[in-house]
Amino acid sequence: MERQKALYPKAYKPWSKNDDALLTKLYKEGTSINELMTLFHRNRGGIASRLRKLGLTR
Image (cartoon, rainbow, N blue to C red; front, side, top):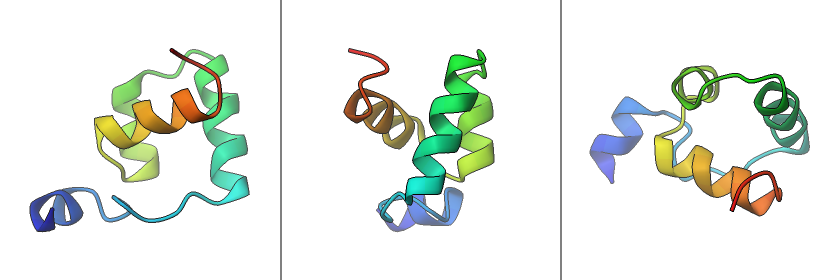
């Protein structure tokens, strides 16, 4: 977990409403998961999990 936090500073931290709104917008515009990882400083699993929670993926 410490390695993940070093690579992705926001890993395991709560998502804000603003982050959710921006993630939704960017995902719907076709932004890649890799780009989202970079923009949000979170790992692939964190992005994928949030997209599912927001009802954007299965």
